[in-house]
Length: 241
Figure 1: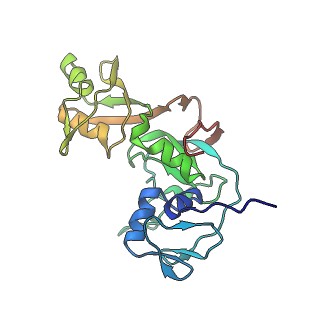
Figure 2 (figure 1 turned 30 degrees about the vertical axis):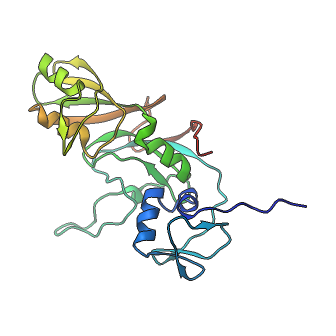
Figure 3 (figure 1 turned 90 degrees about the vertical axis):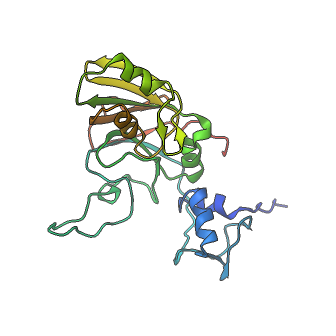
């Protein structure tokens, strides 16, 4: 006699299917945009995956694709989103987004972000649980960046960038590793990933960022990967697996 499948929480199921992150799933459920078998979903609800599930007007299709993790060298000028932008006034095309690239997987999910003016290593997966594990700050994943600024760096700049004294909003940045590489270039390793964090930290030191390149995520390196290209990498073990 076969063992019947076990139900799982709806937000976890949506994450596994690459629909969105768990946090976004909760927000959509609260907003009344998720329906299970025609009824509004609620937080804590469990599903088997055989139900008709509608998210923001679209039916969820069950994926049978194997989990994949991709390292991509994001070019400058690309917005890290899969939403389509309408053309700006005076432009024939909209802003370039992730939709302009083919990563060879269904429903790709980005692990964190890189702002439009930054470039380098960005991880992409079709596994919502893996994306959640890699992006969640509680796991202290190290992200390495090379930053070029507009003037010579001083010892005070390096100390302030690294010691956790910079206030970002109402919370201080965590202490981090900073190493001077050239007179106007340094390496920084973060374990958090707040919005435009490095640019804001530099601004607090009176530094203007001229170039920001992500080179490493834990033990996954950008290496010689050419701009706009990607390669499959080995996914780390996740507590959600």
